[in-house]
Image (cartoon, rainbow, N blue to C red; front, side):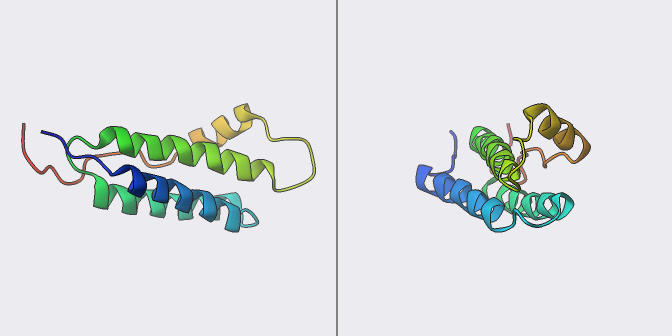
Length: 106
């Protein structure tokens, strides 16, 4: 028995993260990170049930990709290297997906 996020709900959450990154790209990186963490934690608290770990992981990976895209568009200078973003994510990691409500125990 498994529960998982509906495809439409997952797409809506990913689009919401994309829009958040786009709207707040002029904020400081630390403030952007805090906003993304709040958004991800809220999603994990609502959708974090048994059998849904893969969907939560997909959201975190999409968040990394979209944040990288909008960080690259902050100026007209050279693109931001992915290695620099990897360092940034190591210093300020995004929350790891977790199951917050075990519907049934195994």
